[in-house]
Image 1: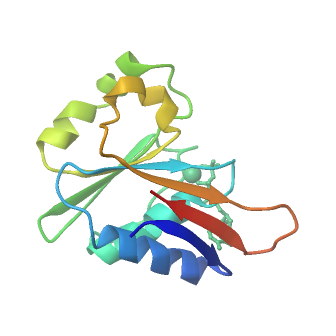
Image 2: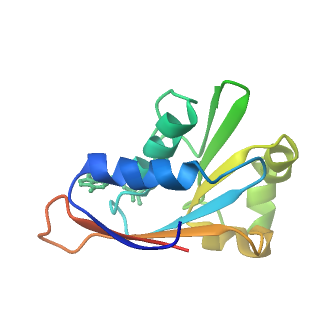
Length: 140
Ligand SMILES: Nc1ncnc2c1ncn2[C@@H]1O[C@H](COP(=O)(O)OP(=O)(O)OP(=O)(O)O)[C@@H](O)[C@H]1O
Ligand SMILES: [Mg+2]
């Protein structure tokens, strides 16, 4: 799926996340872009539910990397906000996770520089101020 999706609730964000997750396999990287509080982590929660890897995706303020396993699948959620560059990103296990066949969902992917593969999926979420739960989710 590609394109721009207007959503009006967290549930609709989860539905878009479910449709993207259905296309993903081992070693795929999803880059999540958008301002603080746009809904990046919420989108990853929807991916986790869709992949059957359950568990709670913890806010990166408390946890830089969270692993979600279930049914032989692994979703790794990384928030790279506090990292400085590729060496930091490698030190949290980037290559090991990919070798293990994880799907990586990455907030603040600019920190990872050239580690981001050319075929990474891009999710950009915008939340206009005063728009309540409405969001625009662009997927490429
Ligand atoms: N349609 C929506 N989609 C996603 N989140 C929504 C939506 N409407 C309201 N929200 C709320 O907006 C907040 C988004 O927070 P979230 O942690 O997902 O953002 P984030 O982009 O990951 O922020 P950060 O940059 O701090 O990591 C949540 O409280 C969520 O309930
Ligand atoms: Mg977040």
